[in-house]
Length: 213
Image (cartoon, rainbow, N blue to C red; front, side, top):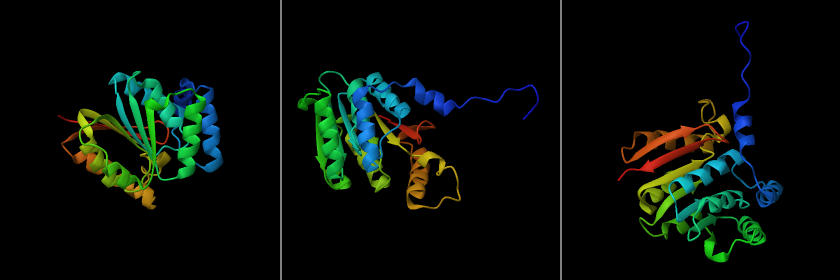
C-alpha cells in the first residue's frame, strides 16, 4: 500500500448495516440459523424491497422460501393488492415462514406458500403473469432461469440471490457443483440477448436481469 493513503473501509459491512431489519425479520433470521435455511442477507433483503417498490410489482415469485426473511422484505415493497408466491422444497422452511408471516400480522390473501419439488411447482405457474422472480437455490438453476423467462411479463425482473456463492464463483479453482452451476448461468444470461443483466456484489452476490420486450 502506498504511504499516505488510508486503507479503505469494509464496503460490504457498511452496505449490510445500512439496511434495517425489523423484529420479525430478525426473528425469522434467528429461526433460519437454527435449521441452516439459505436466507438473504439484510443488504440483499433491502435491495429486494427496493426493486419490488421501484417496479411496483404486484405479482412476485420467490423460489427458495427459507425461513421467510426474503418474503418479509418483498412484502414490504409490494403494494397493498400485491401477492407473493413463495416456494420451497422443505416443509420445515414453509412451516416457519408461515408462522412468522402470521406473527407479523400479514393477511393470508397477501401470500401463498407452496411446498414441493421446485421445478415441478414452478412449471405449473402461469405464463407472463409476474413482474419479479427471485431465485435462491442453485439446484436446477438453468431450468429455473428458463422458467423465469416464461413466467415474467415483458420488462419483468429476474433476481438470482447468492449467485456469486459468497466469492467462490469468482474463483475459477472452485469446482463444486453449486459454484459451477452459478458461474455457468451467469455466462449464459450475459450472452443471451433476451436479457439485460448486471451482477451486484452484495450479500453472497446478486444477478439482476431485465426481460427485454
